[in-house]
Every structure is written in C-alpha cells, then in structure tokens.
Picture 1: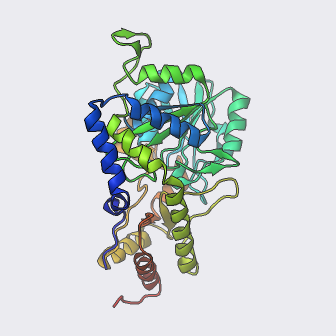
Picture 2 (picture 1 turned 90 degrees about the horizontal axis):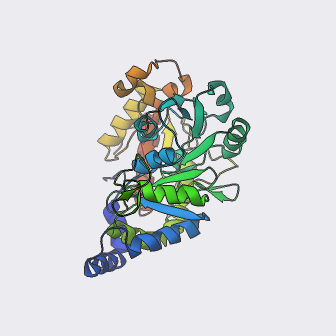
Length: 375
C-alpha cells in the first residue's frame, strides 16, 4: 500500500463543484485583485476568528513581515522567537532589519518555553513572536503576561493553527496581530499562496492595508514607508471562502485520526503529540519523537520502504542554518530544540485519509519497533 504524506486531490474531489463554480465566477467578473471575494473572505474570516479586522495578503511570510513593519520593528530592535519552526518565522524579522533572539522550546509541546523568555530580554527587545507549532497554541497566558510587564508587542505566528482555540480565544487573536498562511497543505489551504493578518486594532488594520499595496491608501499616493506588493488575489479568496465553511469539520476529522493514531501507537517507545489543557489541537502535523537521529532515520527509511511517505518538521534549528551564521549563534544555544530536531518525524495525517491507510501506517511503525518484517 502507498500512503502519501498529504493528498490535496482527495480534498479537491470532495468540494470540486463548489470550487470550480467559485473560480468561474471570478473569471466572469473580470475582477482579480482586491475585489469582492477578498472583502467577503476577510469579513468571514474575521467573524470566524472573533477578530475586529482581517487583512488578506500574498502569503504567510509576508503576513509576518507586514505585522512587524506595522508595529515599527526595524534596525536596532530585537524580537524574541522560537528556533524550532519554519525559517519564515525568523526570516521575517531579518527582513525588517531587526535581530531574532531565540528562546528554547518546551520538550513536550515543542512550542517556545515562556519561562525562558525573560532571561533573553534586553533593552533592545521590542516584541515577542511565538509560533503555534503543529496546530497547538503556545502558552499565550504567560507570553502576554511577560509582554505586558515589559511593554512588548506580541505578534502570533498562527500559520499552522487556523481554528485552534486557547482558553476560549482563537489562535491569532490574543496578541497585537495574528498571522496566517493559506499555503495549499495548511488546514485551511488555497490553490496557491495566500496569507492573512488579524487584529482588533483599527489603526494597525488600516496601516496593514496600506503596507500591502506599497504603503498607499489612494492609488499613486504613498503614505507609509516600507510597503510591498502583497495582495490576496480574488481566485484564492473565492476558493478560501468555500473552504472556510468546512474548516471545523476538517479539524474535527484530524482530531479523530490523531486519537486513532494515539490508540494504536501508545505502547511504542515514541513520544506522541502532547495536547496541553490550555489549548485545543488541530493536528496540522502529527509529529512523533524517537530516541534520536539514528533511530529516527531508520524509522523513516523503514516507512518509505513500506510505502509510507513521511516528513521532518524541522531537521535543523533555525540559527544553525548557514544563512544565520553571521548572527553569531552556535550549537548549544538552544539544546532542547537541537535535541528534538534530530529525533522527530511527521506521519501522514489529512482529513480525507482512509482508516485503512492510517492502520497501515500504524502497523508499519509497530513492526519497526517490534523487529518484524512487513509481509
């Protein structure tokens, strides 16, 4: 049996008529940039999140950058963030001219450990950028407490957490600005790139709307410096309007499948995803932790030989990438992130995955640890 890591065609087939009708309507309208679909999607997304404002942009990376720019983060500033994430989280900080300062992670959830934040604060610290990794919120109560104590801005990277709830609040609505990605493999994904920002601050929302069109409110009149061209297009917005209606159903399905994985794998020497009491989990990724790199690599090879695609999210802490060498970080700076990055592996999980496929993955993983050869 072949089990892909994700199957985007399977989801498309379940809503094909709705998607094609929505896209055809865009073609017939002749309106492709910042039109009615973008406006209606922004309103629907804001209503879903319980946020006063939502601003559609070109992708999640731009969302992070524009959030930082709107909050006046730039050269001379430091932003605290996690070393264990997709590199876009900290690259956005570098794009502003600021410096990312890395805070090690919690070994259970892999989110930033908030109890290590204050020791990294300096007179140059201006913001905290937590990442809600794999679909579970960071400890935002503690993050917000520290931010208030030190008068810091909070920008949430909720790119993997659309629909996650933290103590009654949606991911991306607790800080000054929340950032989202609609990359096709996300829980709410488009058919191309897309992103969004959410905020309750009217002035920030207005500034973000200008920054996404080169800092202009009126065409050819530019009021804010540092703007870029980053607009959610009408086709993606039309597709996302359709998909938004299904996001809760898809996230429930992910939870059901994660529970089945947990039941089938609980006796194995693996650390399964840990769900904290303070946050729901939408299992954007189902990531397991082995004893270390040799075992992880052997498990991945065994899964691949038996038809199961896997992925590693993420194999190297951000500060150890060659592109970050000039910042002066070195091995040992965030030991937990370094240890986790060598031991984790993500198993296939997506809403349309069949029970047969999930059972096959679990059987292969079990066979690996029990030293059996798959038939």
